[in-house]
Length: 216
Image: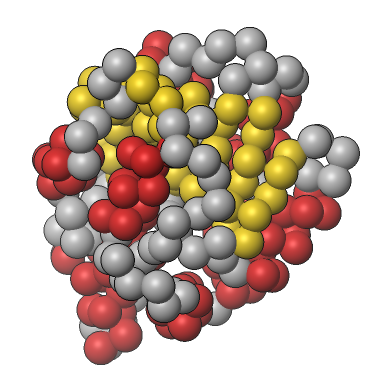
């Protein structure tokens, strides 16, 4: 596994940090609405005081909602970008959430088999080698623990290009965003020793929502 930080890759991928922040804020209500929490409640069985880790927590949007729903849970967020981590620290100052600056492509300082739920929302495709996130998740999950993965997936170039110009940068972004199909995500998760419970698409097939369990 490479020990080189992927911060430069992240900066290249996100391009415009302010636009990225704005998109995260503006899309939160849609992403984390009933379509998110209905399946979550079906597949995530969090014990009282259980530990949830958000890999790629960004500005803490999901962690804030998790705190509101799970007041007794232990919450940890891992984020590489210092500006986003600082925003999460401000956003979650009163929420009793642990935040770690860490690269998802290398082992994060969380003990093996210590976490009940690992969640990652729209971070998988941002890694130079996305399966490294699954390696980390499988390592830190307890037997019987749950992985919740939400990410953009393959969709037609003609649909992706609506309102965009066909430039080299746009095509590079398309390659980054649309690398895997939902079936590919399921295969990758299974290849890392986790049992897929369900995978389905949201938002007209543009995103996949996957639940998997580490064998007990």
